[in-house]
Amino acid sequence: MSTYRAYQVTGQRNFELVEREVVPPEPGHVRVRVDSCGVCHSDFLAVEGQRPDPRQPVVPGHEIAGVVDAVGDGVTAWTIGDRVGLGFLGGQCNECEYCRRGDFVNCTDQPQPGTTEDGGYAEVVYARATGLVRVPDELEAITAAPLLCAGVTVFNALRSTGAPPAALVAIQGLGGLGHLGVQYAHKLGYRVASIARGPEKAQLATDLGADHYIDSVAEDPGAALTALGGAAAVIATAASGSSMSPLVAGLRPHGQLVVVGAAPDPISVNTADLIFGGRSIVGSLTGSAIENEDNLTFSVANGVAPMVEVMPFEDAPKAYEHMMSGQARFRVVLDIAGSRR
Image 1 (spheres, rainbow, N blue to C red):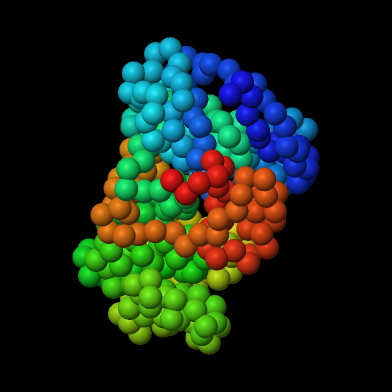
Image 2 (image 1 turned 60 degrees about the vertical axis):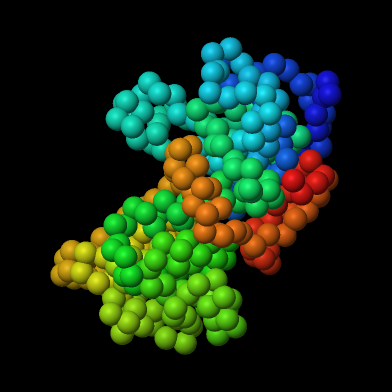
């Protein structure tokens, strides 16, 4: 094809379907034919104009699964036909201080697909080779896409805690991130407590691998965790600081509250809960490309998969609205290529 279709956005929620010319990738970059793209809450940065210059058009989307279509000069690790993914981070520069220390997530010169450069609400995406993730043949693109952001976010958060085997680990929230977090925690060998609002979610939590269900409406979740012996870690996925606040008191000594859900309101904490027992609150942001490959390999080996609603590429604006409505069960994925490969 000489052109490809893309949904670009300007201002706030101003979607436009456009045709763009297919061009060779720049040096150090590849061109990817997109098979599928997840619709993530972080897409609001582009769609709601929460970026440096919302007057400039950008294509949203960063949970991208596809196939390498062309490689630029200097690219040696990838060839045409390779199945690849791209997540929230678009590839480290390998030159800044953080890259030189191996901290690729915090690279200071790293694009963000779908926010600072064009993303996956399109039939073609261009990407830095350093940001690419190898997608196992066993994973269809529709399944792989949400794992490239939502999946690696909770997988890396869990691995960062250092919680010992069989320890109690809690997952707060049972939405797009939380339903994956429960699966990962169970497959990693932890005793899992799922914390969510309302009794109707208890069966789903159990089905996903939770050993305990805590209804945060009916009881104080911190007290409930303490009654279970205290959590070595709580992965907080719900976008609510007030709902995270009581969780610190439910940590065992040296336990961690790991925050991955971006909330508009602050977390309030009793300083004594931190001082006595040496508890801590930390944040965790996605993972590097190689960590994402670890995530996909683990997911395949252990049967971790997102629950998805698939929508056609042409319905990308509707898919975004559906995701933002909070009614999605649990990840929305655009079928860009028109087939469930």
